[in-house]
Length: 101
Image (cartoon, rainbow, N blue to C red):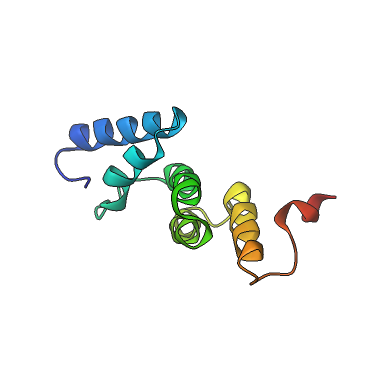
């Protein structure tokens, strides 16, 4: 969980993001799942949503996407990813990428 000084928090976030970029998705979940102090920005939550999707599927990814969209409601990537996840769960009739075709 992310707790401690601002420097420690930043180091943990950088470590989590590096793990995501290198494909070690399970390592991302530990620091981000415990962020209770609001130290994680919308972009990191979007990246976390991708990790959740790869590890657990659509439903967990949607929770992370909702956190990302709460912080940045106009994030088009998060909106499209959420639309795709909802569509795969049968909750939506339009595929996110179809909006631009």
